[in-house]
Amino acid sequence: MSLLSKLKGAGPSGYGYGSSAEDVTAGLDLSGKTYLVTGCNSGIGLETARVLALRGARLVAAARTVKKAEDAVSPFTKDFRAVACELSEPASVAAAVASLQDETFDGIICNAGIMALPKLNLSHGYELQFMTNHIGHFILVTGLLDRLAPEGRVVMLSSDAHKFPVSGGVNFDNLDGSNGYGGAKFYGQSKLANLLFARELATRLKPGQTANAVHPGVINTNLSRNMSSVVSTLSSIFEPLVLKSIPEGAATQTWAATHPSLAKVNGEYMADCNVAKSSKLGTDMALAKRLWEVSEEIVAKLVP
Image 1 (cartoon, rainbow, N blue to C red):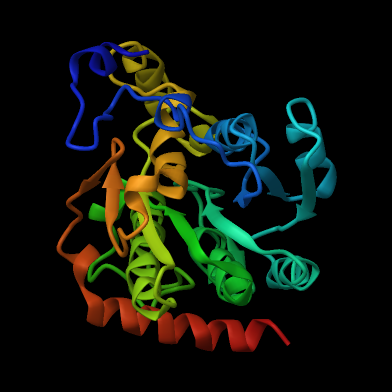
Image 2 (spheres, one colour):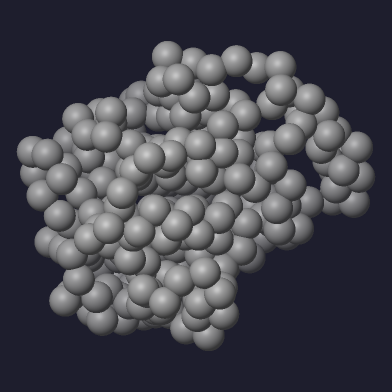
């Protein structure tokens, strides 16, 4: 627990910066519920999966390979199904969707992602962060909407980095980075896309279902493995002061996916286990609708 975790108090929900995933699920019985967690094999995805299982939930554990998923969750639960879902590969995501049509999900937690790649990387002609963080999850979630329970929840892992995207928020004319690339800006674009996807999805779901986006906080996990050595050094220095622990980082998405008080909360941005304010771009529903339409066009080209 950082110094800031000790100093910051709880918000209106009763939870706050220093709350852990175990804290926000204390007393909950998730027996009979099934949750899909992407990126379940490390960091806050692993902690989210662990706490869900601790509260009695069945897991559909998604990672790049079945083995990674199995190795991650088998030490703490036997009630799981492992699935390979390489988010940067549309065929892999589509195969995962096809294999899960016999499931019913009480929650889909889109946790996996990559961050601030220092050099431009492409997947199927699109910048890798946008492809992995947004398009991969877009294929997964839209493909499983028919399998979402009547009161099912979709939780998108966004970030306060959405406040610092490329010019205009999402540069539809430069999704391949050919007209200029910056790792942090393109990460911000992908996280804004996650937020806008949740906002638009919230308008399209059946009554009773919800979609929300969360900022987990700043956490020293392997998501930051692509950051420069200077940033990594600063991160290690400031970790005792301001960085969240992994249990704290997992709290907001776990809260969003499970807490009874959020049954009717839809289309919101959340941070520190409370509803929070996003950037102005993060509330731009015209941009959200265009992103949805462009995403559908991209997916139509990439998934047979």
